[in-house]
Image (tube, rainbow, N blue to C red; front, side):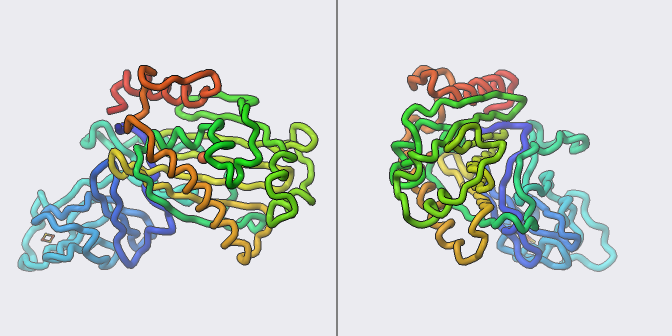
Length: 349
Ligand code: FES
Ligand SMILES: [Fe+2]
């Protein structure tokens, strides 16, 4: 299933560099990403128009991608600038070009515009989704980490899992889910445009019963201060938001102590999704705590992966004929309704 005429994250910005190409698989097709001499990201199909070699197996020369087979060079707009075997002075054949995919960078990610009509004008593309709030990378009051993990599951199933509240006490009973009440109904939820949001109370006392007195949680618990985000004494707040096509943000706020996890769920193929995550914490900002924080993200991602990879059928059931969704699945229902609307508009294939 593909959502068309949408911005998708396809890579972490940090993964795209100036001295070597990066291969990305997206909706079953292969692309090459790199950075030109101005630092701008180029995205082209990973196929040289000459004889079909993989451009990502080539190299970067003067900010252009150079095919490893006969050395043709392409700029980020897809134009061919050099055919070494041609005699100097010969005009560049008109057909020596490839189709550039519109790309932008924001929030630490590379985004591409996935058009319904690939030949349509690239003028006046809609703006990127406004993902946030997210700390700036240079903000010294936050520490951030990045990572990625591939799941054998459809990207829409994965997207749903990141908005699915009621699985937490079961799937995550070995990690942060120990904090969760069985009845996790959102305090507030809405759908605006292509974004869904929900806010949930995170009761602190149940959270800390799980491993009171140990590690980060004990430290976190002992010093937590109240803030406007504390809706009641002893409670924190969890904000979960999703932006189509493929970004989720989970923010857990206990006063000044906050954790945010922004994840892009990149559709590699119909049954394969690459989760690119950026994790931010406002406490224990020393690099010495990175190993612990990364271990926690890896652990709860693995908990989700185990169950999401078992879901059948492969795609979410937009008609509601196969699944039995209830009021407690409000966000899943909201997302599926939005996807049905996209499909009616010819934007979900
Ligand atoms: S196949 Fe790429 S230059 Fe020949
Ligand atoms: Fe989960």
